Image (cartoon, rainbow, N blue to C red; front, side, top):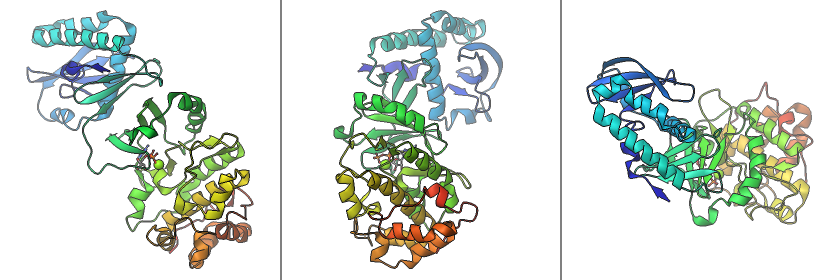
Length: 415
Ligand SMILES: Nc1ncnc2c1ncn2[C@@H]1O[C@H](COP(=O)(O)OP(=O)(O)O)[C@@H](O)[C@H]1O
Ligand SMILES: [Mg+2]
């Protein structure tokens, strides 16, 4: 893999020196060591066109140098790619040669040019991986430069993050307001280019839904996703907060659409649901187990133990078609319930629960909290059927999708 030590020294992308105007990304602030900051206008493609104005480098412009996000780095990375794509040093050189900059900092502009050529050369020499990205490593960051000009490029800082969240197979290794980078925890969980290229069409189609966070695999061990906020397990189940079930409306509609196309989700749970601020809808992440029902199971992990029953599990192993839909619906209903009801949350707490009960969680315990939730949130005519389903999802099937069964206008939290 290519090593470019000097990448961070490149004044053009060094984030202590250059920041994108957060309001108008057609501008960047460029700081030179003459204690001045320059506002530079960018072309559509991200080339520096002209220096618009300059001001002394003290507050408020100092703020731009602080808290500089990955988003900046990423957009800079995209610019780098554009320059590289064009194979045209002239635009860049003319930026460096612009009389104002050259007269102020001839040494800096010279090193910009040299570093730029080095980056360009290193990029050209590094191979394109199975996911269409060139992987460049520097001391502080990993750069994933897309081969496809319409595709975004990414910069993943190597800075470790405190209390990193992880799932069964991936862990968060970099985080910004906009993006989450996840690394596979072990080699056995690595993405296999061939398998995942085949899955791309399915996943990309699903990501058109507002109920799903966009994602992009950039190497066999790295996926970069839109930051959808905290996952519900993390943000909710450890606190005393509850959400109204209506925040799941988009997710329920999405699951219903997928089921009507014979596609199953396979791994619905609170850890795979994320949400941003108040009033925002929940969105799904981690579609690794999503697949057409006709396809052989991708793995033997057939769902989450606590959101599946023994009898359903047996039917999944036997390949019973209806059981796959029921397993998704059961997991989705329980996830919605646990996020909107204290008592159900305790019923589902792994410390209280027998993992993968024979019949269903609500059979082994007090059914009243489940019926209470159903009476408050399911449209009246369907309540008995939903109660039967919750009691034994391997025998009973929902009469309609959860999206159609919910009383969206009146749903509420329960105790
Ligand atoms: N797009 C995202 N937005 C916010 N958090 C995320 C996102 N993707 C993953 N995470 C966090 O990382 C955890 C693990 O990611 P996930 O894709 O579910 O991996 P795994 O396959 O290991 O379950 C999630 O439970 C969540 O806390
Ligand atoms: Mg997950």
